[in-house]
Length: 358
Image (tube, rainbow, N blue to C red; front, side, top):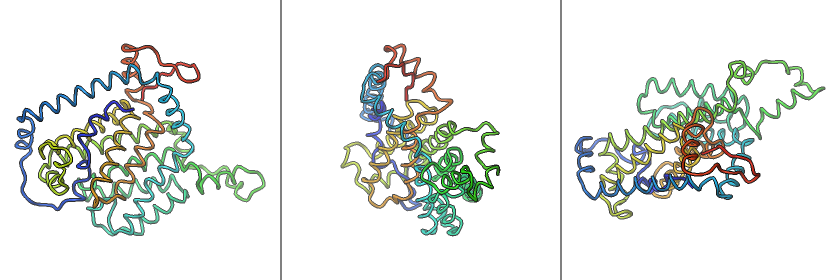
């Protein structure tokens, strides 16, 4: 249902963490030479023009007809019904790869070899069990930032962890979780835990600051969108030599008969487009679905890519499929205005007007 799925095809398997599947060093074209090679080829320009036209037509069609399909309405309603499990989803998406990082001997990213097993495994256990969830998420943010200070910019490869940690901090543990059990014990008269009912929690502090659960999609979008855009630009466009190694290693030109340079340029363009759409909250669910498709094709296309390192990205894109854009998104302003210009106001299955556009 995404209007930019057409563009995703051009960014298939090469859209991965290049540093995870290639060796450092080696010669390659400069950024300027790489861009000149891509943009001076008439065939590449024709492919880019055709892709742009396809995305434009798909976007117009989505604006005009997308919200009038009952299948779309039912899909959105079903995804929204998963909200009670959002906290659980985020905990799994962050806790599982964090546990793997701890036992694997690396610090968040497989290319940062720092022994922090005790810290990472402890945080992962608390998140997976849902015990002291918000405190664990806050500790995770501080741990990541402390590592980033000494491993910048390499650790930016795993900046999606910040999206996960902030999402958990705002959403909370969800259900099922140990925290929810303890909370119910506190709220039930006659229990031992009810004596701690008036203890101030992290949730109480966030509420006093005006930070509600509805802010979670915004926080996830910001860090996830920046991560996609950063990977697309820095790993593909600004380091074409390493990206070209991926094309050669997996013989990707046999999958699509285009030049290796166009493969790399298309991969970077796809990730950049997805990142900017998520960051700005434009067709958020569609962009998240496109990101999920990129990750899936990477999973099946690159057999030695560390799957565990991408679990957080899978979970975060899935979370946006559930929540949609959240506040401060073009889905709430520009997109409805565009839809109003190209078609009538959509009607939900229950007969009520539906302004959502993501």
